[in-house]
Image (tube, rainbow, N blue to C red; front, side, top):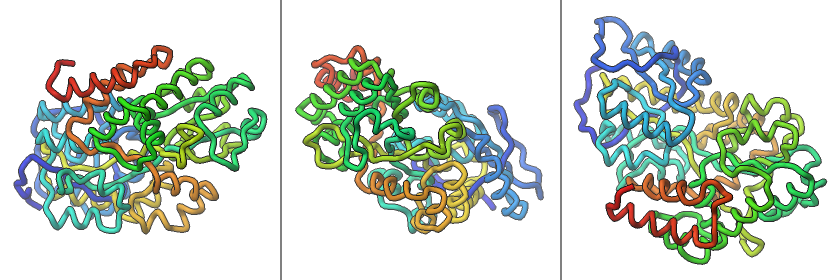
Length: 414
């Protein structure tokens, strides 16, 4: 196939599962030997877990392409910086496993290849509404939905009962903090501080969605005060450090009682020691008066990089990676929720999640997606700076972080 010569504004992806060998970063032009498979460099977090999928798609391409995995940093902030640097310096990535929170920023920066209308239609057909909205920027689909999931509450065995919590009814963050404190256990939080804060604000305002302005308005008002109170109670209870990349391992360690994090943690190898006693409950309520828990939503899209050697072949690889068979396999092996409704409703996924699937799907339906905005990273920077560590959060923190975010959005220096 020949390159379509698209511009560098939008993103394309579609899927199944991809094959590939882990490789070091290499920039510079690649020579393509006639008759040889095109090497498609796939940038993705936790790359080794996708090696089998990469092989499946490579083998199924009839010699058209060979997927080569490129490991991305595990921390979202580090991943954003690394990806921007690679794309801006000409590192020839072809397919990008892109955090949905970054889709709008990279599209606006001209770092993604344009997606043809026909490809956009093919890659979004039959996908969940929230996952399609996450890759739609100003009315244009710029990437392929791949995985998209909510956060839920995990607890171990009789932990909740010993903590005096009735898990047949919704529990609040403050109840969780108090319960963990009573039994000398921990309440671990996976994900980012921004995820936590936006979910708390949305939960206090009882809003399913919020653009940047709605988020900042809520942050500066009563919902922000509620969110701040939750974090201060958590910090005073001394039951955990707040959002941390080590949350899952701390949950498995002695004293681990509760863990709030993405649904895919159900299949995390590190949780294997406690999987037999693991139970899943809805995301905690922001307050006792809240009507519904609002879980933060997020996932990964697959996009064609503006540096792609052959954009057509990159689209073919994405189409394989996002296909029903690939998504079903992905869900059963990694726990990442499919965006394809066919896969989400399959017997394989139902068997893999068991009774927990109902909780996960309810959280998905009522969750809070990230704002699809090119400047969302500026708001995240203000929240991360103002709300971490949790012991530094004061009554003034919500309003001051909202003010700092608006300053950055208005062009202020970070």
